[in-house]
Image (cartoon, rainbow, N blue to C red; front, top):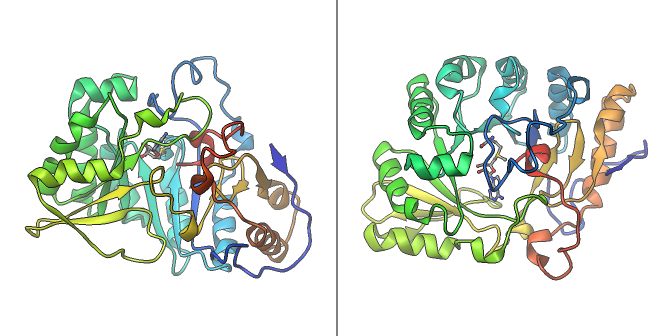
Length: 344
Ligand code: SAM
């Protein structure tokens, strides 16, 4: 569902709960070559699923223009995501446009499947930080989770290619779903501690409407920290900045750190400074939003940068989302947007 943005003024950029606008996530495609059971299950995203037409997608120039306009409101960080961002053709051209925007910290989240091929070109285009999702080192478990028979070794190859190209830091995202991959927590921790990459565990979330989420399937961040700490003792570390999504824990022996993203059991709405632009240019102020605001109509309708900036300002100042804090009270009947569309 889309709410049109009226074309009028002002952009005082704190929302109704006093939160500023710092991070922008941009979904550059709703397509993905994986069918992760917790994100794009085959039953819904099968062969006959209607993905967006090319003309509906924001062009690279439109994305770069919007990113520039968002910097006026204090955006410091842009994350490209999807769907799978590396399946969008010539994505490195977009990276080039975005990395030319002064003061912008640019990063990208990928499933790693095409990274071995693309790491060097992405790095040369100006992308120097990356997050790779990987849910297990066990091929059988990973294949059940990605549901397209994709082997672990190819993702590791991508991660190694990114390291060789010069990416730093490299972060690894692991979603933990009970009964599926809890047994992979320790092997993953051991492996990435050794490799020197930051592993971040994500609590399985109730995004979208297709993954059949149940609270019982969530392995809490607390539980994850306990499992690792029993073998490799951990101590809490200070956040790098206010509003950091992952809670940091460092290995007591000084061999690195992990992160846990407790979006279900310890909601962090209070510090949420993130906005999201969907593949077709809808602005969302929460991952769990049920409707967006149409920026593409403004861009394609010849609105000036000032008018678009003002419209964004109005949306942000009206924002009062805190879904994860009120989860369960009155959120169950909401028709939520799929993560592959809104951008994870
Ligand atoms: N395709 C890219 C990838 O795999 O990283 C980018 C998009 S994906 C939607 C972004 C992140 O969201 C991935 O790390 C994925 O594991 C995570 N994710 C997807 N569905 C999730 C869910 N229900 N709960 C928690 N994390 C989820």
